[in-house]
Amino acid sequence: MKSLSFLSPLAPQTPSSTRRSVLAGITGALAALILGAGLAAAKPASPAATAAPVAAKGEPILVGHYGSLTGKEATFGQSTSNGIKLAIEQFNAKGGWKGRPVVLREYDTKGEAREATLAASRLVESDKVVALLGEVASSLSLAAAPIAQKAGVPMITPSSTNPQVTAIGDMIFRVCFIDPFQGYAGAKFAHENLKAKSAAILIDQAQAYAVGLGAEFKQNFIKFGGRIATEQTYTGGAQDFTAQLTSIKSAKPDVIYIPGYYTDVGNIALQARKAGITVPLLGGDGWDSEQLAKIAKDAIDGCFYTNHYAPDQPDPRVRTFIAAYRKAFGGSVPDGLAALGYDAANILFDAIARADSLDGKKLRDAIAATKNFPAVTGDITINENRDAVKSAVVVEMAGDPPTPKYTATIKPK
Image (cartoon, rainbow, N blue to C red; front, side, top):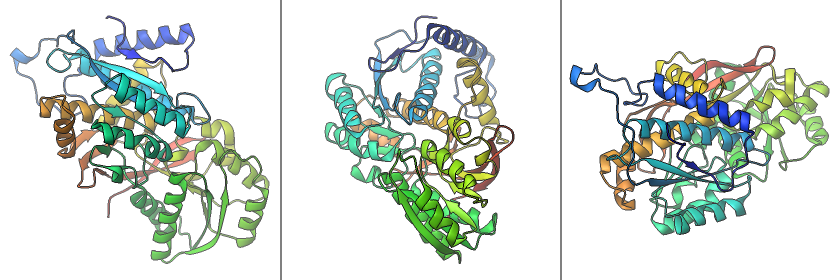
């Protein structure tokens, strides 16, 4: 195999032993797997179609990714990057597009809006990518998407759930569900599964993601007949949540909804249990990181969050993806961000094939026409708002140490 088709000028350097492991793993994975149909259920091949695909060797097609490869939410960008890279290797191994391989140009946003804007500008203006993949955080996608829109370059965010992201323009898409549905899913689970009659809400007031998701949970929980006992706010990166947790404890809610990111949620869980709060904590996909349990330890045991997929889902597509990912990345189990990065890249490649063109407008039209795409995170249809219509899952952090366990599937309304 030739060197991998990834160019990451601003990405953090990986120890050489880890790079060797990843490269060896990807080589083994691609040699062992049948990659021609992605994760779709394929029809049996005819004898004439069983020859091994020829790897792409023509003129490269440049695709951009901007994500938080470093910073306090670094696992988000790193996981997304891994998923994208796996999809690219599979696509190139089966011949790319008309023999042309995809090459990834990737920049680190460091989790900062200014860096996201700079990265997107560089990708579309200097690197001339045919499409953008990113960002994870809604605030960062909101900062960068106008650049893609103005340049006429299609952008697919794997996991920005704030509704305003795709409202920026007709070049902006997503493969994740949006906050109105995720808030509904969390409220429905709290009401029906946890039997909660009252809820406290604790929101990171600086994050568009947290503010929007908190508002949707509140609205839907009240519709289900629940009561909001108290609403509290904090700013991401805070270390002391004593005042907020004291108010929450006094309100005696049945559940606490915390639509924040794993870095803060881990600290909140530790301090909540120390304060004597024993009710379940509930959150959104911002919790999805292996670092959550490392920070919170057993304080997060018995807590729940809505997500895009669960590693132990009884789904053949999930099993196939996990096997390929683990072989490629040293045995690591992919989180939801990795799965969404993989899905976003594959939907782009599917659109390129259907458009039979790299023209921005034609690619946009092909992405918009995506229907029932068999992705890892569920069948994806892009609606008129360029949002993905799909189910959500709820996972429970359980075990020693706590790990995500599939609990329920919540279907769209």
